[in-house]
Amino acid sequence: MEKALWYLLTATRGGTNRVRIIRCLSDQPMNANRLAEELDVGYKTVRHHLDMLESHGVIEGGDNKYGRLYFLTDQFEHNRETFEEIARRLE
Image (cartoon, rainbow, N blue to C red; front, side):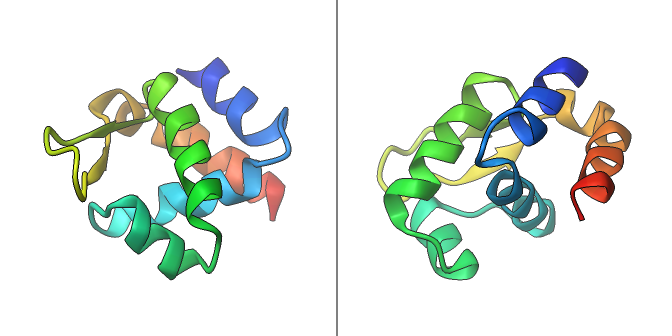
């Protein structure tokens, strides 16, 4: 997970938006539409970042396809310290 976080947040252009998404999901589960509104980012952009985060095990989606809520994974929570270190470096 540590390598995935470094890759997702620093080695690609969308790192800043992914940090913002993770911060929002730390407060509460949200669906893609709500995240787009909250972050003032396009829906398709949010969907792309959610797909990347989900494919690397950072987040997981609920069972419902419509209005699917996203949650941070337990695996991510075990590596939150690494996330916070990376986020500080990006600020």
